Length: 143
Image (cartoon, rainbow, N blue to C red; front, side, top):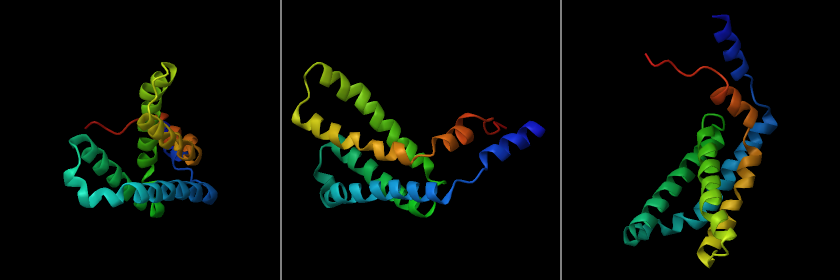
């Protein structure tokens, strides 16, 4: 029992106001970027090829969740994590092998530049808090 209480106390340590504002800045960065690039495509979404429509819908949905992150930065932390994970996967599994092979075309280069902006999200994510709350303690009950 005391182990559970100690683990709960460790994960409930509040984030500083500066960290919360940094996270809000990350959410705002996502919202503004996606609103400028993706939201204008919404009226013609039905005309896009299937996977472009899927990507548009997914990224627009993420931007709306990031908008909630402005008010609830800690509760919406999974949005920041998803942004980091998918972009690092794309950079490592698609961009890097193509760059090494000297096969980066204009489209992949454009996406590479856009995905490289993930450094902003990496910088504002409270990784110590992520580890304490998601990786370091006991998981939720199964029953």
